[in-house]
Image 1 (cartoon, one colour):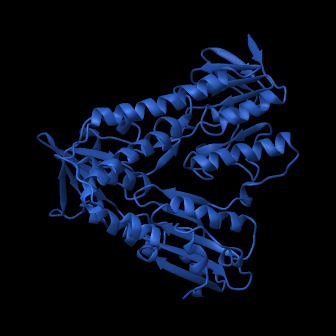
Image 2: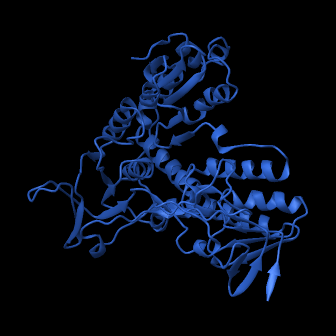
Image 3: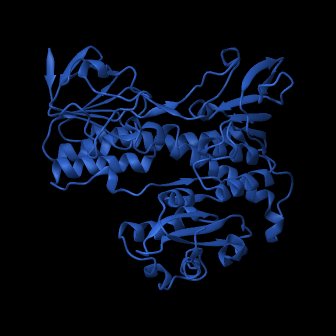
Length: 459
């Protein structure tokens, strides 16, 4: 027996639920399928729980610095990891149940819990039941990559998902991977009280950023006592009693790091290998990401792919924007495209990094004439007042059009300040819109006009 729907949505990450709600509102009969936890990565193992942990780590860090602000706290600062985890679980759980209740409360929407697999271009089987629809939307997300690494099968290791179950303090956490996930967990657990070593195969941390950003982030982490090992060209792991040994060089007498726990943070892979995409004829690339066009349509008419599984962003905000693009084209007669969006993201260490548009390296490679301005956070009054002066602000402008090409704000509220620049970039307005604006004092954003009044040729 086949159950007929107008649309099937596979996955309840950041794109699936709002799209389901829009389809329901448009009068469609919709099936939405979730195999595990409602809300996807962001709600369960990503943004919400990790930033909740970051907040607890910041509280511990600030408590240790209390005397700098003239505040006396009696006794030694103690972090109750069970209470930290319980707080995280409560906040993330509330969001998860909120998504589930939302979906179950929608008109003409049926929720299925189980693993979905295509049987044809128009049919999906879940829990033995065959569902059929002319429109199918794939929003299955991704998971941590477990790399091929000598000795890994013999040791216990953690990923960003299994870290959510940790309610104790690792004595010495070794993190393999020097990008966003690894750096956030590294600073977090250092502030909780662990010794932390970050091992990165590349020449610097977060290699996608300009070198000065990478160097500043490394300095921030090392100032808190985090050990950073770069150029680890050959990484291996082994047990030594109740300890872990991570080899970070190919030479027989190469360097080693000894610790108590291992976290793998070397990338993500899409959850597409067991969807039966071959039966539907849906094309993927060599990494398993579903190929889509500028409006997120797959090669099969009537099938779309949204969120992390399409390789077009891998952020919560890009997944939600995917929903907006699909809904606009399908329901609003509004031809929105993926290529219209400006890439932006944050690194949520403390202080955070807000990024938008092109890096200086990318601008130089484009060959265009550009201007750049940089200002250290130690010259920002708000940062000085808070006693948090690490980092800098940097903006790159097209010398001819005067449009902002890219920006990095590494410092206090950098993840919020970046949006002032991003909005002007979307408006394709000249940088003078901000440089001539009057901002509120004392804030970090008030220095953006001053910054943009000091543009110099990018060399």
